[in-house]
Structure formats: C-alpha cells, structure tokens
Amino acid sequence: MKYPLLERIQAPGDVKLLQESDLPQLCEEIRQFLIQSVTSTGGHLSSNLGVVELTVALHRTLDLPQDKILFDVGHQCYTHKLLTGRRAGFAALRQKEGISGFPNPKESNCDTFVAGHGSAALSTAIGIARAKKIKNEPGKVVVIVGDGAFTGGMVYEGMNNVSKLNNLIVILNDNKMSISKNVGQMANYLTKLRTDPKYFHAKAHMETVLEQIPVVGSAMIKCLQDGKQFVRRGIYHSTMFEEMGFQYIGPVDGHDVIALDHMINNLQEQFAPIFLHVVTQKGKGLKPAEENPGEFHAVSSIDLNHLTNPELSPKDSFSTTFGSTLAELGNEEPRLCAITAAMKYGTGLNFFKHAHVDRFFDVGMAEEHAVSFAAGLASQGLLPVVAIYSTFFQRAYDQIIHDVNLMKLDVLFAVDRAGLVPGDGETHQGIYDTAFFSQIGIPVYAPANYEELRYWLRYLVREARGPRAIRYARGEEKPSLAALGCSGKTFDCVETREGARIALVSYGAESEEIIAACDLLTQKGIAADCYKLVRLYPLPEGICEALQKYDLILFAEDSVRTGSIGEQLCFAMQQAGWRGQYVLRAVDNTHLLHANVPQLRRDQGLDAAALAEAVLARIKEKEE
Image (cartoon, rainbow, N blue to C red; front, side, top):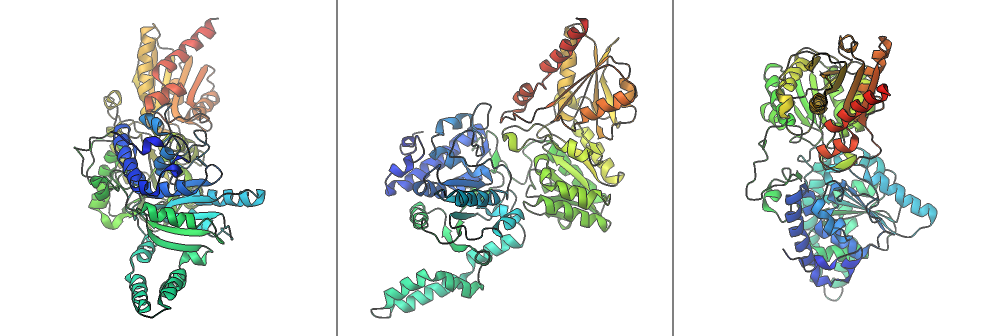
C-alpha cells in the first residue's frame, strides 16, 4: 500500500513541511499504516488509532527535542514514532532488535521518558518542566494523559503540584475507554463536563441573541468567546482543573486536525499551566475496534476478516482458566469477591463478572486502591481475590505490606503475566513478585499447567487463609508441562534417571526448560533428575531432604536473582549441611529486551541449551 505523504516524513520536523490542507490525508495514511502494520506484527492498536490527529498537530507546532512530549500510557506513541522517522522500524515492532512499543530515549532523543505504566507521566512531566525553569531552558513540556489514567491517584498528586508552570501543557485524551471501560466518579465527571447540554445551549442562545445587536454584536460575540472560561465557571461552578491552577480549554474535537493545529499553535504564549481537554474515539478508523476497543487494545498478529467477540476468550490461556475457575468457586462461596485494575478481560475476570456482578469490582488504574479495598473487604469477613499483572502489582507494594500483611488478612493475590513476558519489554516483565511477596512472608504458589492452576486455586480459596499469592504465566500451557498433570503435592520429582547425581530445579513456565535440559544432558551421557516446585514460599517441606543426595544442583527461574527463590533454596541447603555445587540461573534485570519468550530465555541463559551447558561447564571445572 502506498503512503505518499507519510513517505515524505523521514525525520523529526518533516511534518511541518506539508501544507495544512494535506493534514487530513496524512492522518488517513497514518491510520491505514497502523492498521496494516500492527495487525501484522502485533501491538497496541485502539489507543494509537485514537490519537493520530492530536499527535500530528503537536508535531506541527513543537520543536523536538527542545520541546518534550510525554505519553501516559506510553503505548499511545506509535504516530509519534512515525513522525520522528521510525516508519521502517515498524516491521519489527516489539520484536528483538526492533523498535519498542513504548517511548524509549535510547531509541530516539525525541522520546522523553520510558512510560509503560499508567498515571505516572504527569508527575514526570512536572519534574521536567520545573527543571527547565531552574535551568532557564526554553521549550514546552506536553503530556498526553488518557482518561483511563485519571482513575489512578498519582495523576491528582501531580496536578496538585503544577504551581504556575507556564511551560506545561496537559492534554486529556478523553475517549471514555481505558483497557476495560472506565469506572468511577472521575469518569462520570468527565462525561458530564463533555456532554452536559447546559453549557452548549447557553452559549448558542447567547450568540444568537448577540448577533441581532447592530454594530457591537460581533464584538460582543468575540468577547463571549474569549470569556468562555467565565461562562463555563458559571454553569459548572468552576472546573476541578481550574481550581488546581490550570487554564482549562475544551472539550475540543480530537479528530479535527486543522483545528487542533491552530489551537495548539495559539497556546505557545501561555501564562499558566494549560489543561486541554480533547475528545477522541478509541480505535477510530477500524470499525471493529471502534465498536470493541477493549478487544483491540493490544493485539497479536490477527486476520481482520476473522475477529472474535471480546466477551469470549479466543483460546485457552492461564488467565481464562483462572477466571472461569474463580467464577465456579463463586457459585459455592458467597463471600468470594473479585477485584481488578482496568484489566477485566486480560485477567479473565469477565467470567466472574458475568456470573457474580455484585461481587466483581474494576477499580480502574488504581492498583494501590485495589489492594487496600480488598483489605477492607477481608476485614469484614469477605474473601477478596485481587487479580493484577505481575508488573502492576509492584505499584501496590506498600499497601500489600501495610494494609494486608500486617493484619494477616484473607486476601488472595492472583499474579497474572508472571515471569518473562513477550513484546512489551522492560516495563512489563513479571520478574519481581516472587522476591517481594516472599520477603514479607506471603506464601507463593506457581502452577505450571491448567490442572495445577485449578487445583491450587481451589485450595487457596477454600482452605488457605491469610495473605497468599498464586502466579502464572501469560498465554497457553506448554504440552510438556500439561503432560505432568497435578499431583497435589507442593513439589514433584518429574524426571528421574538411574544413578543421577545432578538435580535441575525450577517452577512454573521455566520448568519446561529444565525438562528439556535433562534430555540434552542424557544425550551427553549425563544423568540428571528434574524437580518442579509448586509452592515457592515457604519452601516445600521435604525439598531439602530430597536434594541432599545430589552433588550438583542447578536452579533456574524466570524471576530476578536478588531475593529469588533460588537464593532462598541455596541458603536452606547450606543450613541443612549440604556442601555440593549450586548453580543459580535467574533474570538479569539490567538488560531486558522486547522479544518473544524463547528469545528472552536465550538472552538470559534460561533456555534448555544454556542450562545444560552450565551443568557441563561445572562438571568440567570439577574434573580439572
């Protein structure tokens, strides 16, 4: 497909060389390019289709990198990347050695800041704008914040600290659609602000009356337009944004690129921080995405001619197995509640919502609130389950410690996307949860297949009490792990070979690699046994005794090394008097890539070949 205008943009600033009349066509080309490219490679689609015109208008006015653009959340940045000369990189979007799906300053000096988590960019932007003031540097700082991010409290912490920053422009990208439909009073407030007819009727009526006044009518209309902030204050009794120190502008049409171009250009001279309220349509330009933007938030390679209903799971996964099992448990346990943070479909809790709507809660992008809310429920005798991606549980660490763990409340943490995660790169890896849950004494379970997930989820809901966590990988179970079934034990010896003096140990999805590594060692004439943990913390009773007989133990895990389960097992073995060789293979978080899981494992030395080689190297060292 040809993109005559888009192909003329090879570097930052090239969009300024186009005629204003070319801008609608450029936006159409960008939208078609994104649809064709992202449905081929996978990536974030709906959010990017919604901000095409807005991003074009910003690039027409701003001078990058002197001016700064920040995105919240960063997955809205695809048009920005196209306009800064990275179109060729989209062929390998989110793939190893390709461009990131998020802003990345290592990739371009036009990318201001890494932004993979929501509700944080405004605080960062305020810091950058303040730094410009301190250093007497010119330039604007513009931050685009989705309305979904306004369900997270950090936005308001930042807004309370703008303090006359007249080099800051905050743009609310109001599409009334976060990953799961927005909930709460803030979303309702924005809807009222955007749609209440009183303001528009009053404005239209006053203009009609004034037009009939000879001579001075036109001047008075202009005065009215200049003073619309006063009119808005009279109708709404001020806006929250103005009370916090912003000059509020909007709501405005986020898909009129020429009007946006003029408006943003007019904002170059400002006397206060500006809050520009832009109304957009998520998924614009792709009818299925317009109708079901949640389904197209993040897509794999898809066939646009064969699309699924977003209310249904397209295929089996750990998330849908968790969600459907929890919904079944809700039938027998009336105290069971389910909580998520704007990830109803991603966590599989759509099943629970359909079955038990009164006990399902989507709190928006507010992980801290989700955990403390669960603590409140648990304190009153209910059984809350908090289902959040591993990378986002990090945001609620204080609440896990203070609000749940100190009182030993009955809260079950369902840790989705645990371990290495494809595509999204360093901001989305689920590699810290084993360390931060275990270091505060919370039991952690890691099923490796669907059967184990169902068994242990039932146990954790029906029998276990106090804070507890269950973690599982993104996507489908692996055949080699599905074949293991579920013993109901907290650890299993899943491979044994006669005369083995070497043991390979792991848990969860990484267990696939130690099983394969044992096969590779067998081909080299080396006998090794395989152990798979299900309960990671506290270490299963009997595991140290079972491993005492081995001369060499290799522990492999797709979690960060410091504070890891492997470190804890090594210490426990030493305390038990074992004096053999111990090899720990875990994630080095200093170089996390955006790549698929097999590539990530190879890069981290966690694939079967690397594990087998590590064992062979230790054997060779001992022989020498």
